[in-house]
Image (cartoon, one colour):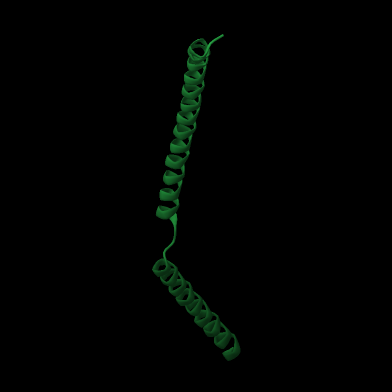
Length: 84
């Protein structure tokens, strides 16, 4: 067995192993790209549904105003009962 015979025998095996590795790597990259696209879509959905600070402040002001109106109505009812 000389060097040329060994080289001719091992070279196709090495090339096949290299392409198998490249194909495997390509498959993993495709899976990673799909996962990244899915996560980007989920992040976009979260951004759309996320309440901003301005919205939270406006909601809080609305709730406080509603509670004050209820409190005033309860006070008026208490005064009416006290007057009777």
